[in-house]
Image 1 (cartoon, rainbow, N blue to C red):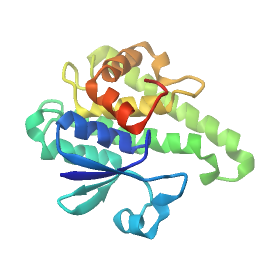
Image 2 (image 1 turned 180 degrees about the vertical axis):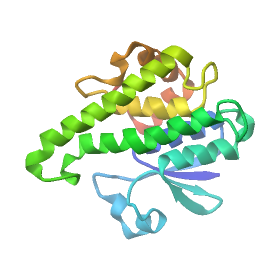
Image 3 (image 1 turned 135 degrees about the vertical axis):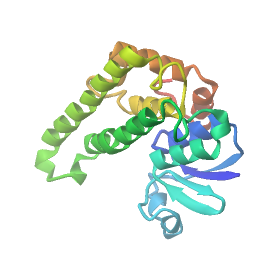
Length: 210
């Protein structure tokens, strides 16, 4: 039994999707970000970063959504949803996972929270810089999928596709959202048709970009 501390539509979404795709027993604990529940001392003892997600695994708390996705894939290797060391696709799986975590997610944070990155009078410039960084990743992903798709690992669906699609969703209200790129849009439609995506929307009460 896993326990996922989550907030709807945030970075916890990919972990929630992974738990559903893997078909493993889990319970959910909602963290109300508007009420600053993520800064509660009890929660900070689990996740000192004060963010979601946090996943309780064998009684111990772990965090960072990309790490949790990798961890779940390895713990449930029999599902085939994450290539193991030495398997075909493993290097590509790691490359894109870390590219999303180290390049795309930080750029989204700068887009949504420019005040965390500099003085208020520079907010527009910082958001513009973030937009260019985000769109550059979509350009790379579009080229990769066009040459190697339909999924990030070729013909095989993996947890990585869930991660990519969650991040696509975050761009939905940007000047040029991810699904303006045609091959990316095709991947998004494939993932949004999956039962796990529909179930997460039901459980988390999500509506946009269904």
